[in-house]
Amino acid sequence: MSQILFPQQHYPEDVAVLQQEDKTILLVGTAHISQQSTDLVKQVIEQEQPDVVCIELDEKRFTALSKPQAWENLDLKQVIKSKQLTTLLVNLILSTYQKKLGGQLGIMPGTELLTAAQCAEHRGIPIALCDRDVRITLRRAWRATSLWKKGYLLATLIASLFDRTELTEEKLQEMRSKDVLSELIKEMADALPQTKAVLIDERDIYMAEKIKETKGSRVVAVVGAGHMEGIRQVLSQDNQHRMEEIANLPPASSMGKIIGWGIPALILLTLFGIGLRHGMEEFGANALYWILANAVPTAVGAAVALGHPLTVLAGFAGSPLTSLTPLVGAGYVCAFVQVMAKPPVVKEFEQVSNAITTVKGWWQNKLLRIFLVFMLTTLGSAVGTWVGGYKLVSSLAQ
Image 1: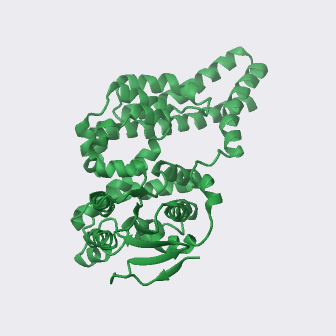
Image 2: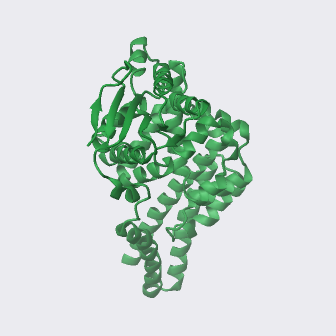
Image 3: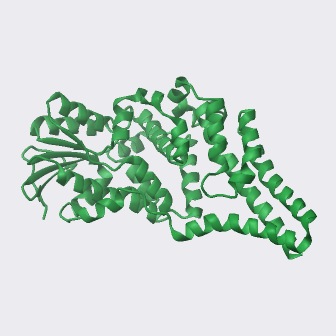
């Protein structure tokens, strides 16, 4: 069982020294946009000279912090093929939110984590990345959130981008002592308990187990202040049996599969029933209505997003077919065509954090336009499916 000890050096309350069996763990809680946290991390590592430094990062986030130019190597086609556009967008929005606050506070988010890695490397101390893959975290959070609350979450995140409220000096001082992202998540906990469980609670368990796995008798672990109490509580527990579950995507629910394949099956059966009951002429008229009901709003969505003409054509031609299978959506097809026809250049990747905070930027920046194409064509296809489906059922009932 872990015990809280007094540090050998005089540290503030942001540092807890815990004993876990034969391992001493110095848990350093930081605010991700705080110069004080950056200075504290450097002080603890220099004074303690630990056997290993654990950092609240995964490989993807560590690369993004240490090699900002990695944006240039992002394979958007692969992102779309693996159906991770939504994950990428949410990650981009959260990153932009922190950068905006960081700009007002005078320090970029994650500086203290990068400083921990650089300080350890300079002294020949091994580092261990102890956080869960951010893609797994975001996708688990997305799957754990109901359809209605997905809309609430996205609306809240997007609204934060366009918030022009200037922070007072008092508010800035308060934020300097907090992990801002964790505070935001805590505020949403009542409305989105499943999301909070994935973003905070599961990661507390994951990081605690990873910290215990590290080699060495003296460990410095640098984590967001919002995770300190949770890690303290679970550090003494044996949660190794949960690691496989929380480190992977949950399997798709049976109900989701039934709905995913059930709607296309219902559409096809309804068309077949119309043909049997009312004849082939009525079958043809309703089939054409179904095609146009899907094709037109999807193409309109692509056009409103200022998609390439080939993207608009792909939406028109592809949506009647993609609506009949849950394996691929019209939004992904259109986004893929848009990437091929109008690939974003390096400059637009570099400017995306500024462009995403303005309405005009979403249409001017080629990267953000891909997200627009994806969202508006997905919406258009969904509208078409329900309008077309309603018409088919009404025709069958006549």
